[in-house]
Amino acid sequence: MTGARTGATTGAVPLFDDDVQPPAQRSEIAPGAVHVPGWLTLPQQRELVAACRRWAAGPVPIRHTRLPRGGAMSVQTVCIGWHWQPYRYTRTGDDVNGARVADFPDWMVRLGRRALVDAYQAPDAGDGYTPDTALINFYDAAAKLGMHQDKDERSDAPVVSLSIGDSCVFRLGSAENRNRPWSDVELASGDLFVLGGPSRFAYHGVPRIHPGTGHPDTGLAHGRLNITMRVTGLTG
Ligand code: MD6
Ligand code: FE
Image (cartoon, rainbow, N blue to C red):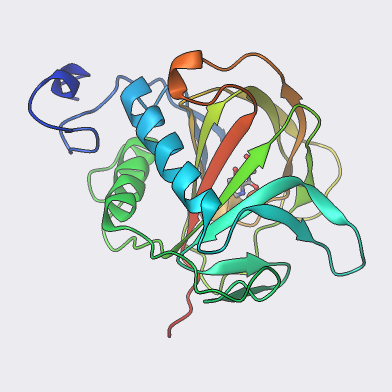
C-alpha cells in the first residue's frame, strides 16, 4: 500500500490511477465474500455519481425493472455493457425503449481489477478479470431488494459491488437457500463488497436503507447508489 490518498491532489483527474490506494480494513464475511469499508475516496464517489447520472438519462433510461409475474422492483436500475432483465442479458433495453445500452468503459474494467486485488489481497487477483456489464441500482428511502442469487451470468467470475450515498443493511446468506443463517453487514458510502469464490452464488439482499446517512459531498443528495460489475460470459 503506497501512495495512500495523496495522488488525488496531483495532476489532472488522477481519480482512478493505480497509485490511489485508500487504506482499507477488509473483512471476509464468508469464504470469497469480502467487505472493504471506505474503499472509494470522496472524489472517486463523486465521479461515479456523475457517470451514473449520465447513464440514468439514457440511451436506456433508469427504470423500475418489471418482474416476470407482474409488479416491479422498488429499486430503480440502469445497465451498461449489457442490459439485464430477470433471467437474461441483451445488448438492447427491450423492456424499456429498445435502444442499445451504453458501452462498458475501460476505466471501470480497471477499477474492477483493482477491487479484486484489494479485496483478496493478492497482486494477481485481478488478472484476467474483464467485467462487461454493470447494474446500477438506485434506492430511495423505502426501496429494498429481496434475497436472490446472481446467476443470470454464464460465468463464475466475482461480482464487484460499490456503494455510494445512504448506508444500508446488506444481508448475506448461503448458496443453498434464501433463509437463515445469514450475516447482516452495514454497507456505507464508499464501501466495496466482493462476492466471489465459494460465495459467488450465495443468496443476498438489501432489507433496509438508512435514510439521511450519506455524505453530501458525494453529489447524491439522498438515496443509495449501488454498482455491481459482472462478467456475463456472453459474446456478441
Ligand atoms: C445492493 N447488490 O447492494 C445490491 N449482488 O444494492 C447486489 O445484489 C449484489 O452487492 C451481487 C454481488 C454484490 C452485490
Ligand atoms: Fe445481487
